[in-house]
Image (tube, rainbow, N blue to C red; front, side, top):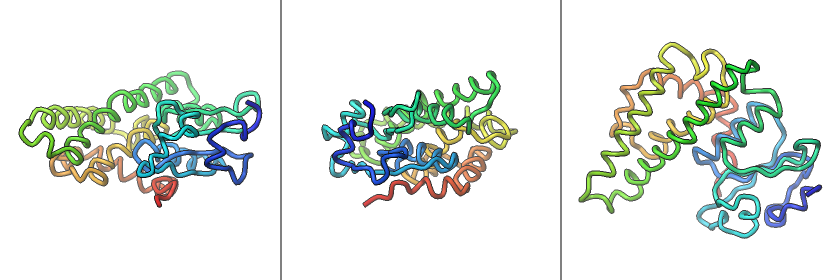
Length: 235
């Protein structure tokens, strides 16, 4: 593919400016990771709403970019060697944007890989486990009303993961110390979502995690986060 128009998704969600990065997303904990990163970096982009209520993620056009039918996904018209590239999976997109711009990631190899390990911690732990917790706590509570096992399992795992974060943040402003990185951007929307999205702060005892709560506030109050958390606007 040599032009943005060669991507079938652009026939359904046309680019106003085909020379800038195209974001296909929804303001969920996974979706806002990329919009927040783009706002922090200052890279021009257009955001296209992928509405789950309309099953946009199941359309042939969206599936042509992400066969796994999840948000977010991007097309960067100025990819490697100046050629367009389409990407899905939020963790991969964060790493791509950080490497492309040299921002939101340490320059030294040790810092680089330690940042990547915390991004993987979110991708493999925080996201799936918090997501399962939220599913059973908020969306499927009636289906497990007579079976306490799912809630016990995912409540305990969510608190365990929060404890890991608490230990990492006990003596530092951000995951990687004083430097705000893609590790923070990957994780904090999910932690924020426990209270803002699932209304589960009391159930999980979030007040026990003082360092985590202060860190979420620091991350969420950044100008790029305030804007990115609402992109793309819902219908």
